[in-house]
Length: 113
Length: 120
Image (cartoon, rainbow over all chains, first blue to last red):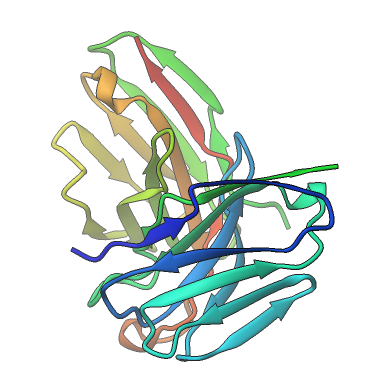
């Protein structure tokens, strides 16, 4: 069974700090996606990484896919209260539909002003 | 363009009752997914449709669960004889696929706000 483990589970920081959250697996994924979810809402796709070693930037967010395509990280620079939310990584299982995603449990981020 | 719409947003029911949820995907999206999310967990895949065909079902989807997408547009998820363990957020997502299934990459899912089910 392919699993995605995310760490840390919870993170509470002050506005302006930098942070990195991780998504790890013992299995290879063809791609990984990162989502942000706010309470009472569905997840919103932030980025998809496909190539091993790939780095993508989205304003203050930097996403990296590991060379072996077994792990990914999300780095936020100068966090803001608007970054608060649950960050989920997800990927399609081997042989499954691209939309049949395995999700990690998420990292719950709280950014205090 | 409106997003994925789910109805109702909240449902409270008694154990043993049947419930039905509706999902309206983004217009022209041909794939529709159902996921379930419990507190402290990430979403878990339940089933998906391409147009009106149900192509994959998770082992999580017991016989009490049934999903339909009769005309390839909206979908319904019915849970019969609800149990307390069915309490969760039920999420619907849609996507638009233009390639052949085997070569689809970078599929983008758009999620609705979910239906929060509480079984008492």
